Amino acid sequence: MEILKTKSEMNNWSKNKKKESKTICLVPTMGYLHKGHISLVEKGKPLCDELVLSIFVNPAQFGPNEDLNSYPSNIKNDLALAQKAGVTAVFLPEKGNIYPENFQTKVALQHLPGFLCGKFRPVHFAGVATVVTKLFNIVMPDIAVFGQKDYQQLQIIRQLTLDLDFNINIVAGDIIREKDGLAMSSRNTYLSGPQRVSALSLSKSLNLARELIAGGETNPYTIKNRLERLIRSFAETNIEYICFCDPQTLEDMEKIDRQVLLAMAVNVGKTRLIDNALINPSQ
Ligand code: AMP
Image 1 (tube, rainbow, N blue to C red):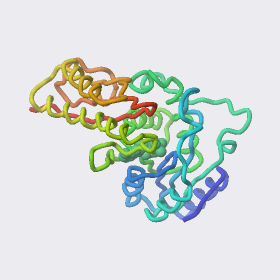
Image 2 (image 1 turned 180 degrees about the vertical axis):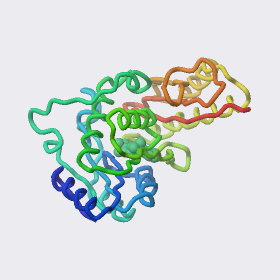
Image 3 (image 1 turned 120 degrees about the vertical axis):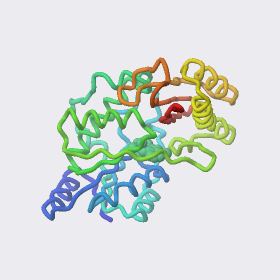
Image 4 (image 1 turned 180 degrees about the horizontal axis):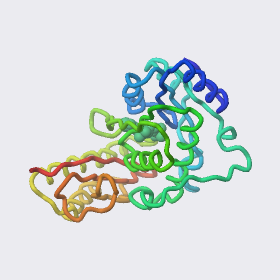
């Protein structure tokens, strides 16, 4: 496994692979790898000759009061996990290499960031779109894998790829969960013992929504009320949003009469957790 620390090293590596007619798959991450990240590697590996994992905590996607400075990191462990998973190259750039002095450009979508997390994190998706555009140009992948855990991000990347004419196949990976249902996240490490219990309120409320919808409930407001009550029954929870929306446009759905995306963000203590599920109503 090669470790490439600058964008020129990375780009030259990719150019050489392309000369050898090798296909490249990219899995972008912010590190502190867990089984969710590794599942994306496993998804991408059979689809390509070379698998590049990038690790970069992108400052542009953090708001001023967010956790950029405390974001967890363990590069040694990440490299060991990447190697074990069969990654061929790790792209591990420094901040100054990605955003040199006098960097000025922003990639921003007009519509999709106006929903869900984007309403509460106004700079986040422009930061994501900018860094992903740069990663696509630097790594030149044929395929890139993103997790459905960050559903809105996935939709934004799909749109960006289309709008900016990247010839890259965007592949989605399922949400990987702990045995008790908590969606894996690097940020779960922030949770205290009691908060870890409260963090289950997200996956439990997704399950409750599935049950209600399977039982024929089609009114999103009725279900939302039930979910709010469930989540608030757990200590230290503070709901940011719960939305029932169209899986493509992310616009609110008034009636659940077709597949719906249920997405939520809940603060547990100071830790912001997100989760989602695509739910089909009973026929
Ligand atoms: P992050 O390091 O949090 O920026 O995530 C990097 C990639 O891993 C993104 O495409 C995420 O959607 C994906 N990811 C994060 N958590 C999970 C999970 N629990 N299951 C599957 N993919 C995940």
